[in-house]
Image (cartoon, rainbow, N blue to C red):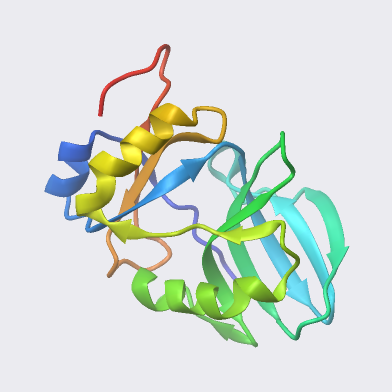
Length: 172
């Protein structure tokens, strides 16, 4: 199975809206990961490093709820929390060509089956970006910006990233 490497576009909110983004989420501090869950064992791998799907095993965990999936997210190096933002495969079915809206529903149905340190990244309408930005500025150790996307995109769709720090804190 081939996995897409999402195109990351450094952006402003105005550029993301002009590109057609209609949803936004907080960008958690951490490095990108993929989580492969099968037969009660989950493997966490680094992902998207240097523009490729790097499959370096970071950790293994055991879970009890039935889930066979490939989840995508970020791992916080300070708290060890894992933030799940997408799903690309579930119960033997490749779901990369579903819209983000459809895959987000699948994340909601499956992320809770793992232990509590696995948290689903909440997605909001793009109109919430200004208010979310205030949260980023208040919690710079937990969040490093916003990610905007199009809810109708497949897994290969671009992610528009609005970073809080480039060299210093900046405005939205």
